Length: 490
Image 1 (cartoon, rainbow, N blue to C red):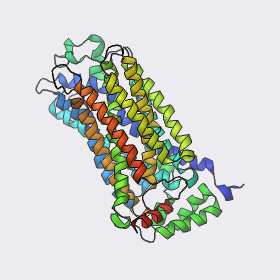
Image 2: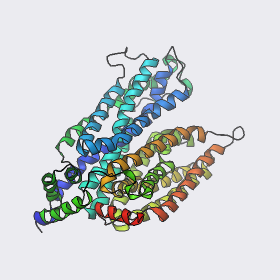
Image 3: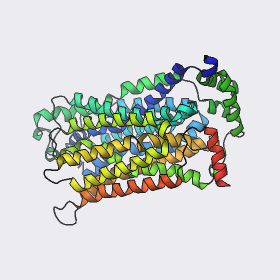
Image 4: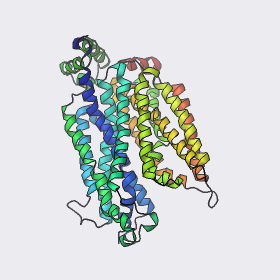
């Protein structure tokens, strides 16, 4: 078979690998806070003229998610008007600015090392800027990959974006671990008593360590912003703006010249107009996309990922950062399961079995958390819960969001679905600690079993939703989805 028949697989892989760097930055940016938050908390707790409360710390730890909501909400507007490629360049630049700004929020305007209310605001501004980049990348990277990938391997290639997200989280766990080195994280009871009261081995973490953790993101961010300039725009976007010959050129390199002509005609047949009203294909189409995003977050996974070191510390593990790294490795391995089975088994079976596995893991945590002698059972249940997410709702949600919407509403529909994802991410992340610490009577474990029991029930509801409403997209073209939703509406 010649390139005329099959296209260049190396060309396809090279542009997909650049695009998934956006996923790596997504994971890196959202997980960097896990290692930095204790040092950051101690730094601002030493402020002489304001009280850095737990409420402030909760907001500061989650402020990037506000940017994620903004970025994902505007991703459709940007990707439709500027294109997928230019929008990803903007995301890369936002990542880069955020990394350097979060490392040294005093830049130009404030005295270095003096925690003040204004510096806290500026730090959060930089984190929100990075969050906007995450929001853009989270919505546009799967769409970019989905629009350049041949249908027979599209699910596998889009799943690599989730692999990159988890790999980015694992990388930052290692980076934070090595930055911390022999230095200690400050204890909660030391915070607010002044730097002199903090263990000398933890003082470097408070003054400097968290800065290096945030600043380390500048390296992959700069690389992504540079490399994305060299990838092509997606054929489907090029057709939507009337650049058919450029689209044919990209399609030919990826699929071969013979297939490219047919694919181009198929794209043009579903893009008679550039965009259509959002509800053209019915409310169910939008509802399914939104609920995929809602369930991906409502199952509670980010409450584990964002607070992993604290959770393993609360369980009683001696080295919570080491256990966190192990969990990251397990997550990587089970994401690979999805990548290599999604085209064989289909999207729906992976989601349903993953939901059941997560329910078992979450209920296992609810039954064992805090009980002396059951620490291993709790840790194992957390790993089952996390691993089940990684071969199902983690990657497959992104695959489906990139696939299920018709061409003419994809930009706007993906933006809405991903915005809901970040909204529920914020809700779950911000509600986890107060919900987990709830007590009916003094000293009871009500919050522990209630929180994970609730996540387990939501996992079962997610399985039911997939079984009843989510279409199977294995082996279909993006243009097939236009015809399917038209038939469903009729």
